[in-house]
Length: 127
Image 1 (cartoon, rainbow, N blue to C red):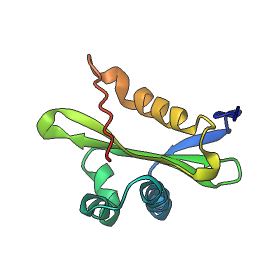
Image 2: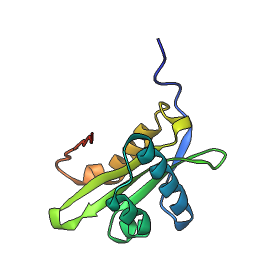
Image 3: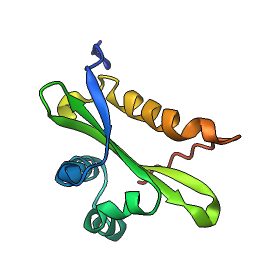
Image 4: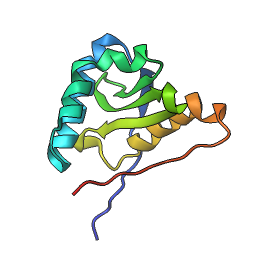
């Protein structure tokens, strides 16, 4: 039987800086093109990555000890709904199954999760 998960990869989680813009786009394009297809909303997000942070959200990046950006996710702020959306989570194919997504999710919860009485998680699957 094939082992799905391997030992966790040691990464540090950093918040967004403009120098990581291309890494965020690269990782998300790689993931979307592997499992879905690029949509207009994806192109819009890639064209305005900095807007996520400027509008009260945050982007998190998983970076290895040698400086390679191997994962990312965005926390989009929706003030009209009084909510945040975990979006654009992606991990490089070579680093999947190594708990990087878990580390990114934990960073989001550490930043925002304790600020709210309730946290709803919605998972959407597209055919």
